[in-house]
Image (cartoon, rainbow, N blue to C red; front, side, top):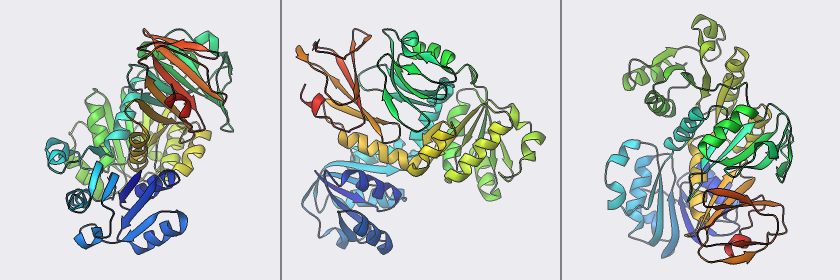
Length: 426
């Protein structure tokens, strides 16, 4: 496919890095240093130009399968979406947007935008899911079904068969060295990161067994950071009737946040590094801490301090994929930050076709492909290491040998190779 990316920053670069081996990528950015770096790092076509200048677009091809406007500026993304239609035929148009107020307008219809990706909203919604399943590390929706894919750090040793039933299956365990083991009647070890698929009520019961020391419910929430992500998160969590406290060390940002947030949300203007703050403000009484700053180092440090003072549930926003393994080794639940969440969202949309949906898990190391079946057919599992489940009449069936699939079945195909040919050929 031909893909045009407007913006060569962290989002645009990571999208290109993960797609350029299979697709023809063109990147536009006005920053010459970024363009030179991308040109030296990736086999893509780079154009150094201002996205607000129509002359920038004159050398483009006449047709692209995807146009992805992912700069840090909403207005530039919107302007480029308006200009591009004058120079090329765009089949799919995706825009990264930070200001959620645009969702109240019909601007996407006017500019023929297929998908508006609200970058702050994605991590906020993922955190909201964690608040409802507080023992989990991550929660993902799965297409076609009401099934969820969750991860949890196991606090016990247990055989997978003890937990499994027709509504719940263990997918994989990841050990402390990040080795992925697709589970076929496996043993779950203490400190393993365990991936489970199941219905909400079944998952709640499994989480009580695997993580008995984690909070069972959440009432009091501590947020580090009062920028746009912290503000949006506070508003969403307040709608769940939770008590919210925000710590922000920048007095200007704290003041702006106080103007935007309800007075019932406490904002403390203080240094993140003042550990005495925990004792003087009784912050250790919170059920969960959420570090939402743009610095992974700060988020890790704040989470460790919160844990030191007795907060059992700590959540880290992950802005840099290279810190993912460090956070995992520290048993810190990870939520992708706005930029990385945008990268994942774009990739999942591009890689998902009409009949096959794709989701990433374990960072970018593993994927699940989801497909609905319309004909009866006998199948054999692929030879590669993987996990295959069929959802039939609300019951999960593990597939290890030749099996007949039926019309209406939903197939879940988990692997680490990224090879989707097996499920494509069903």
